[in-house]
Length: 375
Image (cartoon, rainbow, N blue to C red; front, side, top):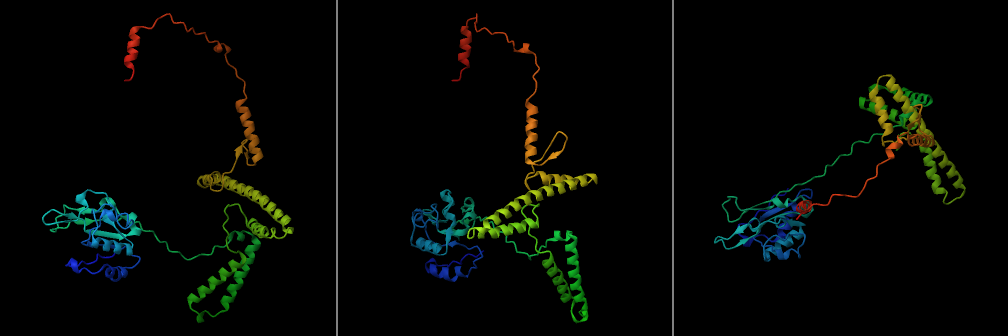
């Protein structure tokens, strides 16, 4: 935060506004919050609110003098805002200077803040404090700023993630092991005495990284957990055919075929993924690992991976196909609302009610009813 501009003892010899802007304000770093404050011996009135809107508020003096216009020019030139003219306070908390005879009370002390920090100004706490004992004909002027700074997160080093699921295939694992072993054999031939430890570690990391990038490839995180690499490759092919089919009609049939394979593969992959999760749940319950089992159940039933539409039939068998689920719901609702009503028919024989009243309305009842009415 920039320090206040020092004021000259003689107001008539105060440096020009342009000198202050060029010599002092320009020296403030752009990243700092610029606050300019002091006794300017300038009167900024409410008549300047419309002309200098955005630079001053309407809670100030009645009129503007020459020094006030120069102060507004300085504030406008440097994108500053007169903070203590924004709040609606009583006159004793707006005026900052009192004449010795007590006849004149003006606002000539100002605190200016950058316009980009206008929302940080606490207008209720930006005012003059006439009760402060400072031994001067000026009142103490204070403002409160609540600045909310943005947290800057540094970008960490990027780490390459490889598709480690390919190592579950024995053939891929054997090829990966053979190539890594061959590169290690080449490293062992080198004389370790001629190289320092950092160079050897870098060569080892390079050998493993290059082999993994060549055999495994980078991991392509799918949006759905059941999407396999084969489906992603088909999606790439479909994306390529989509641009070609517009220019050449012969790719239209191939595009439809690939699109059909993707839809079928997605259904089969999702079904297989659900079956694997169910097997893991069963294994967890058999091993008394209820925490893992219930976590898998939660993953299956929440909307994280898409809610799975499952229901049990009469034999407690889970149904996942849409047609089976629809059939089971139809069967359930038919059995729920189609049942025999066995009741006593005599209960429907309700005696007739006569509307004839042999007793007349009493005057006291009418008086009580009228008395109970709202006024």
